[in-house]
Length: 266
Image (tube, rainbow, N blue to C red):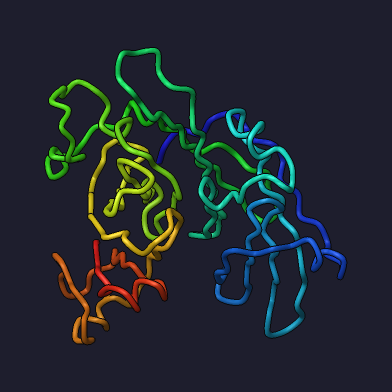
């Protein structure tokens, strides 16, 4: 496990009244410990319904305040959606939260798109604590990713993830150290990649390309645990899978199901 960093701003569980319904705008929902549900509004926090079947109790768990590089752009409720820079999930009794910061351009002769990602952890009754931080210029490709990205730049000494536009982090559901990120060379490029970044080893572990002709530049992918049942479905493309694979990762969204085959990338 990565070493903990200094504590993040406190997260407190609050009892929820009906007035919260007018403010809360969830963009993600997932189960917690089998008997609870969590709705996530990246501006406000995690709305947790405990003991859904027996004696439901609603709690609001606040997310950490915006990190330094994001405070100016996302400082109020009228600012852009936080979905491109944040994600929340639950695993092994703990909530996990990630936020990306887009940093100022590096003082070099080459155009670089630098970012920093910080992961936090918390339980319902504890404060958020920093789990790890990784910078784009620290990440090196694994042997299988040496060709990424496909650019005309022959300089091999530049950080590879500083050459592409990255956003929409998604925490791995099975491993604490892996984060998935969408990347393109230019905002209007017809193709892009989903990247698997290991925040502990600071390695780019996997790269899978996709066609983005009919997609906006936002989070449109989903990790799930049922891909082995899709192997015989019409139009499904399976890559490098084995029976009993416990780390499936697929594109699963309505617009892709309509316009192109579902593609498993892990």
